[in-house]
Image (cartoon, rainbow, N blue to C red; front, top):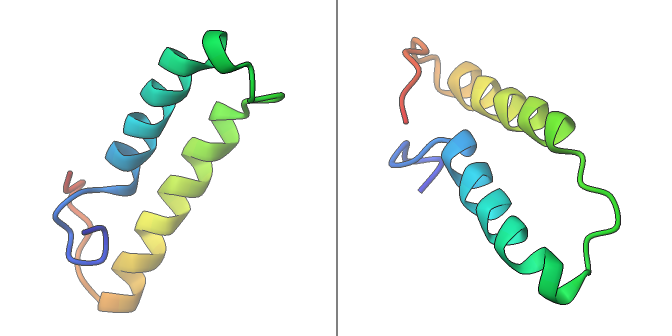
Length: 61
């Protein structure tokens, strides 16, 4: 879905962060949540996909 640009990496990351927030207090399995770094890596992944395809980045989501 990400490679086909049906959804952006940021939308996928947001969905996972919501799941973590909803379940963390019950499961207590996430020791360190580095949301800032995760968002930076998601942006890098989007940029890499754009560079690979030669497409013009328009902020697709």
